[in-house]
Length: 490
Image: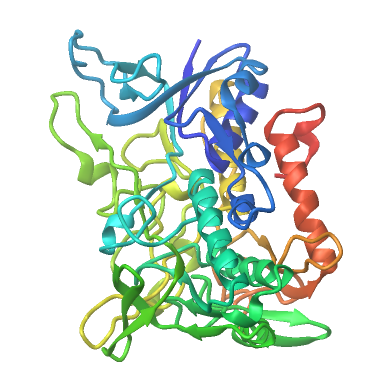
């Protein structure tokens, strides 16, 4: 019997666990380690952040679900990886690879353990690096977040307080966007600002609100994908026009090419690519933090630190990508990973946000002062699920005797769909629906735009909102392993 150890239970980790439990859970041991006892459908945190959904509607307990498919669950965080074995603290030397974990389960808080493995999947996701910008974040700073259900609940509390004040005649300024020059996940903030706009209109106070978008994108609609051209209504336009039209229609101001440098009570300071610094006052701010890899060390059999061999400097794990430094113009779709296997350890994989991208998709930019201000590559949602399933398929096959990896999931060969709601009312809510294929532009196959324009398009309307609402329930149903879950799309 072999043991597959999965670190993390987000979209990618949970996808891998679901399929491995179904495929090999009766013959082999599948273990999931996650510091959180609950699974969270992160895209719907947006609706929690405006009071349209509750925390129980976007989360559920993991352990009872995993029990259905013979998957063990440990509520703990991974501390270090020992891919060559070694001597665990308080134990004896072993050749078996293992991971040291520290339990976050209230019944075992502070306990540590060495969990051995035959195959390891790193799906730890991101560290929400609020500390990269002084004053950023809901815990130790002055801004809100929708990255977790708890953050989204707090954001809604502040939002409702703003609405109450505006109903008394006060005017308020809302600043929403990215909180650092190297952020990714602009889409979450993009969706949130439209939901705030919708909520303020429903409350009858939109005329008393100033909404400001701030982002490290070079142009609106970049989303860390180098911009995008889309087919809409029979003609081709670019993401900039698509995004700007949404903002203009709703009276939202915007600042792009901006890296937030610090946040103080009611005020943030940002730098533009031209090197100038500006201040923006706010009453309410929701700024997405930059992502870093979850802090983990790696050691060889003798206890030597090999972290730099296994992880990139940003903390994300190196996989089968080409990390050779070279000018942006010389990077290629071929640089992107296909199997997500560690080049150093063949039984180790990294999926979802946990893998290190080989290079940015958007052109790297620095201000005249040398400050990096440009988006990093998105790896959430559909790409995370596709990557998780592909790695699960390869491990299943290896356990059945396969000699090589045959399943691939390159972001240069997969598409993604984004449905960004602009309000959740069943009759008045709308959504901006966009599909992109491939995620990483392929100018060899599609020389004009880098993407297949037959599969890359965008629309705005009520139907997109219905789709968003339906998908919420479909993915929750699937994630809970309800009957027929495996035939539903990931």
